[in-house]
Amino acid sequence: MTHLASQPLRIVAVHGVGYHDRRAVTEEVRATQRTHWTRYLASGMGLHTNRFDLDFAYYAAALHTGPIEQGASGMEELDDPLAKELMTAWLEELGAPRPVSQGALTLPLRYAASWVAEKFSLDGRLTQLFIRLFFHEVARYLRTDDDPARLAAREEVAIRIAEHRPRVVIAHSLGTVVAYEALHAHPELNVELLLTLGSPLAMPRAVFDRLTPRPTSPSGPLGARPTSAARWVNIADPGDPVAIPPSLARFFTGIALDLTTPIDATFGFHHAKNYLSCAATAATLGPYLGA
Image (cartoon, rainbow, N blue to C red; front, side, top):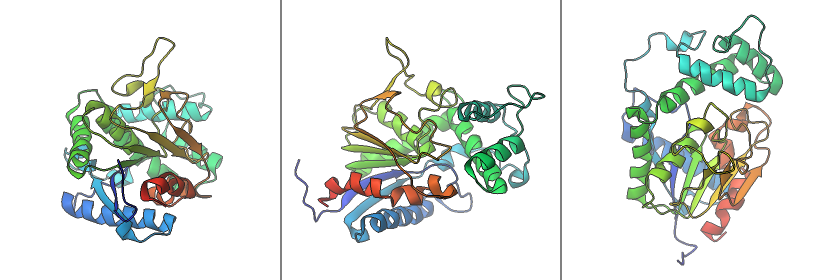
């Protein structure tokens, strides 16, 4: 199919954790984030924002359908057993030593935050806030294969793709998991490129072993590029503690490019803004824009 360079590149964006806003209606969040993500992409490529026609798949609301947690912002520990289990698996993959007095599911959040902050030279308080937010939302999504919240989040992504008919799907962080499953669940969708950024898809036990469809092959567990995506490119900062391990090609077949490249020197190495505006993203999207 021939695409004129003057035509805006149609994209569906799939966000990571931390996007839920209970005070705003869905369309307001989508409109605001559509503007932000378009600006980040345009800035990184040195192009005008009108070169992009971006829709935003806002699935976070589907993960926050229960009662509002009272005092959640002040919690010192993870109160969800699954969230704590996922955090423990993540720490073990990072190589964190387990305190002698702590069992497999009793590692305290403060210990995790302290160790990760020291390993990656991060601010301890911000690291604790991020870890709590990340694993609460990941646990909400991955609780069971047929959990209503998981299915609703996945369907929101599929609906946005079906309606917007993008050439490219760009997914970040937890959004890479949602997009991967949505594209697998809907082989009728047709996108030219799946671009995953800062992805935890290969995180052993915490994410990889909980994916649907379950990774499998005669030689060992392997995921696969969704057939609805013609091409898959993955980008990860080598210092991104969420993209563990940063390379997906050992765990998934059909990845065209698996790029490990520095995005930002501070904790910004996991921010969507920095992934979207980095040189690797610009180089990946350039051919689709005629740039």
